[in-house]
Image (cartoon, rainbow, N blue to C red):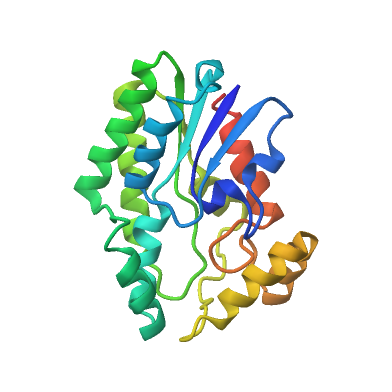
Length: 228
């Protein structure tokens, strides 16, 4: 059995979870919308106490997008600053050194439990002014940790840019975030509209600048499958 530990990109409420494109085998979806590296570590400790945890053979760890995304959104408008300023008080964001420390703890916890671990790289964000160099730096940390611990690394960003060398990167949620609220409502009630929304917005790899459409979900799944 597989445990997919991650955030909304794993859960798949907004956009498609890459799990949808994985082989059909038993798994637990450990995706939580808005979660950070610190949150994933806390949940891993909780999962270890669950009756199903001994059946887990491999943990696929895809976490860290919100440690970059949420602070970035705070710079785009007052509403986001209020929302994530409040959330940041209890859902801690990790800077690069802290991100590496937390990821080490996740890896070492999984390995100490006698399970295999796959590290999943952070994907492309198609948002306006998103810090791409910071994204690449975080992926560099993950790739280095994978080498240090002898783990497979699923280079999702690399696979996406190979498929779409020059993707659009200028989408925004608006100052009031109304597009975001509409997306939650529409995609939650009518999941089949996700790719139509992505196409209408001209986004090659996301439905809303952040979450996977079917194309990028399949790309991410293929990168993970090669590691299993």
